[in-house]
Length: 442
Image (cartoon, rainbow, N blue to C red; front, side, top):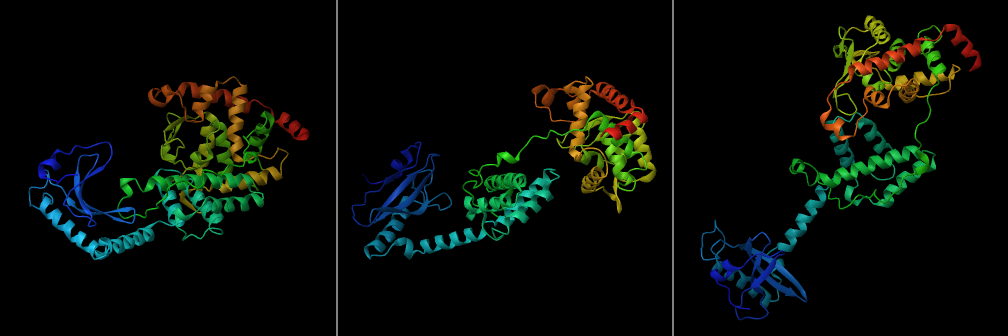
């Protein structure tokens, strides 16, 4: 160990990890002035001393480029000034006083820690912030996710609880109560929401966009990671309507049999789902009249309502045009399928689910849900020989091959139209007498 000089300090080279070089001032028990050299090459004067066997450090100042010759404070601290500061700290040690306590450094650190802890976001803020980001990203389920998280979590974890203090056991308790009441499938849904929310919180604090003015969560890990799914609850959907059931349903949708159980908007929406090859009900329900090109006979699902955020152009057969023409006489502005109380809002999809449920209770058709319409069209169109590639494109699936994702921008409109025309003929090519016969067999 030797006495530091500006030239020696200037010659200290950076290494892969930070290291210290101390100044030999000939004293003992009074700590040491050191230069800390960082992997970046920057250098700082620090005072190092020991309390028992524990080394403590106090930052004194930055080392200027000339190694401490200068006294210009804007460029850094001179070596002489750093030594004077180290002597002050050394004198405190001789009096038996910890310099950090004397300088209020420890108290300040404690105050800062208290402030940081107070600023840590609660689980309520985590859920709100996460679902707000979902909304920004165009995820239409953000309200459903927030509602499920609030409903299932807050009875067991107070919403003011810091997100960083939520443990795996806390979340196991939330999910266990759901499983106990028989909601196994929903428990998996809530688990996935929790997993996503905590993953969001982990990245949130490091995102420069959130650096100023937002709550920090201070998460070190995702407490949901170690909690398994309930595998027995997750079953791939298998139910689809038979060819005869589809035709019977379409007949009912256009007859007096069902008009007292299902409103006209709902009947038209369900019919259009079939005649467009199994489009997502939400995407049709939230489309507006200006998305239809009557001359070209197309309906454009715009990116903001498309599940995969890509525009989706659907060719319209004569049957689809006929359904939309009937709907046009009932609603001439805004949404194609407006809410019953306001044409400025689209129809509530809960109404569709309830109408289907009521219909199944009063018909001979096996019970089904709206999602089964999409699966039915996909399956029965396959039986007609329509290729999976065209069926996938017709239903606007997110195609994962490199060509489709990055290069192929062909709309496949002639192919999609031909497929829908084949499907339309299949739906129409069934005599009413046969449908009546089918009623007796179901």
